[in-house]
Image 1 (cartoon, one colour):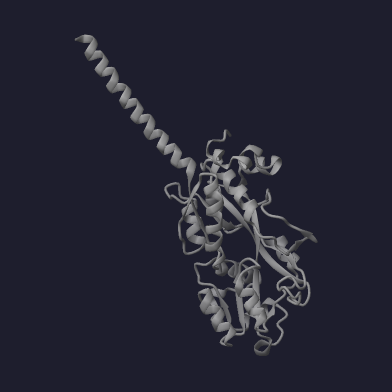
Image 2 (cartoon, one colour; image 1 turned 45 degrees about the vertical axis):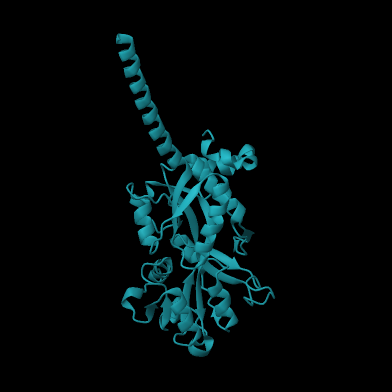
Amino acid sequence: MRNIKSIAISTIILIALLLVGATLFLAKSSQLNTIYVSGAIENKEWAYDFQRAAEYLNQYGIQPKLIETTGPIEVATLLSDPKSKLNAAFVFDGLLTQVQAENLYSLGSFSFDPIWIFYNDKMVGNPSSIDDIAKQKVLLGPKESDSYALTKKLFELNGINIEENSNFVPLPLEERLTAFLSGKAGVMVFSGPFSADVISKSLYAGNKLFEIPNTNNYATKSNFIALTLPAGSIDVNGTMPAKDTKLLATTTLLAVKKDLAPALQLGMLMTAAEMIRANPYKYNDTSIKFPAPMFQSSLETSPTARKYYEDGPPALIKRFPWLLPYWPF
């Protein structure tokens, strides 16, 4: 009888241990296979890019889940909050506070996103300075958007507070573009990649792209970088812009929580390498290919990212993508 009782107790203990093990395995499996991502880029490119990225990540056995946000302030708050599910997001270098940055890693730079200032020369003439722009009615992104945050920063560097200047009118992108193209304002500001429709639509309508003077001076006083947009790089006919144009831009980083599984970090890097579009910009007369390491940013570079940029992706993972969540790090 004792033997039977001992066997029964042992069986119960074994079953309990198996249940605990299964629970831990499932929790770990979820950590290794699910990532919560967001972006604060103010155009439809982000939604499209997320769908494309999901297809690549699924090959690695990774399930991305999108968390919608109102803009960079909410993204920064959620990403740096240990209790938030959000564990990866595109952020602009320099817009995170030091406290927020302490809990995050950078996986590298993924694009340059210039501040595009378009103007209607028939309405405002040919402005030659930021002060000239500020004297006009300027349409820009909503207050919670990345476009607004970057525009505010640019004008602050010129001693102009856009929140106290009634010439600056925040509007959602589609409404802003419609108002600008219909002549309700002489200037419109947009921040985002060169591939965004708003850029070609503005130029095709006969508007001009403002060239910010002395861009290198901004680069020494802020996180902005000075870029050159080569002549003819916007349209297939090679006519827009008419000349090489100096732009100010921010670098878009992929930021992740420091406790994000290395396998997920590697999967995102490999996905980015597959899907990132070529860009026309020149930085210090050199073309930049993304993703790229960025060691002088506001965020510490992830050890996984450093290894990726030094050695490249594991050959075995490229051949058998489904192994990624279980790859030893």
